[in-house]
Image (tube, rainbow, N blue to C red; front, side):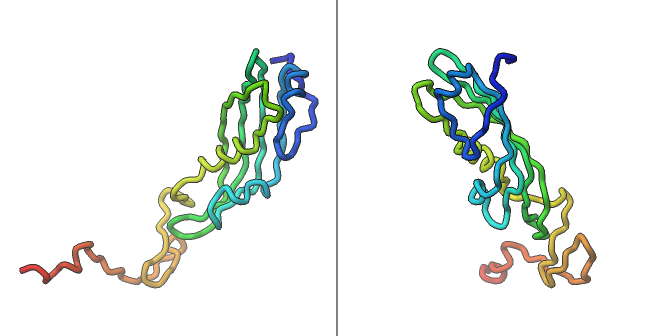
Length: 162
């Protein structure tokens, strides 16, 4: 890997000219990317706040192999207590591109990789107590004294069948 070209001005849109990569015989680079490129990746209010991409392009006869790593920070809302919290992410990807294409667009690959990091339910901590269903008090901060009703999913059917 020592023969890779390292002094390269990385385009912020991550669109690389295939001819440049072929001419250099490969490329290793990294770039800090603007979070604005990823504003639509997560559902609101979750958002990406910092993104760095590290890329390695390897040239073969008919293909260019791209190995990438994307890491940074995201702001996510806890599914139980609704507080926003910061989380780190770190993901890797591998993709092959034809040497016949003019442009190698890595941005779509980075967006897809980031989209796959979004969990169905984020939790601020594994033992988050959430909110009181009666008064809305954050149960992580203090107990409220409410006695939530414990309804069975079959409570509506009670008395309907004799």
